[in-house]
Amino acid sequence: MSDPGAPCEVHVLVPRLSGGEVLVRDGSGARPALPVVRLPGEAGERPGSIFDGVRSSTGFDGLLGMSGFYDLEPDYLKGYRDDNCYFNNPAWYLRDIAGPALDVLRTACRIILVSGRGAYEAPAASQQLSDLLRAKDIPHVMDFWGEDVNHDWPWWRRMLPHYLDRL
Image (tube, rainbow, N blue to C red):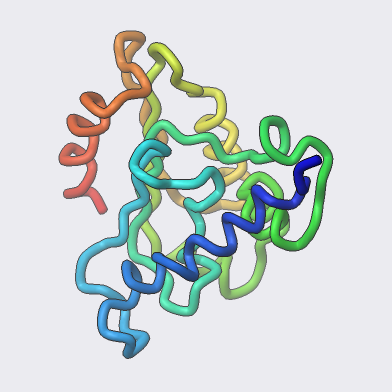
């Protein structure tokens, strides 16, 4: 029998192992000169990792969510809940976000969500996160690409340069 909390434990562990090197290059705690960009699942992003910078002490200046889904409940958690799950599931965490973390998202972070409408894409998942951001008055861009835009590297390679200048 597998541990129902395992998916959330991975979400806590990965930023500890790799996130610090991405967000804090010299160990000083200073923000990086370049924006930190979260890439789609096949590039190493875990569902829910999109807001790692909000929970970290270093934060980030911009966020690009491409072809993502942002609610771990239906496919991963299946009713399991604990603090790791809460803080790594944007659909839960953003509902309650307040104070300084909310202020950062409202004032100091550029957020862009992008989804295709082709094979293996989940545009409704990106729309759901966009709706949640809108309900919290968090400025963001939600862009949908065409029916021919699939959940695949060739499309992400085209999307990334299009949006980097906007971060």
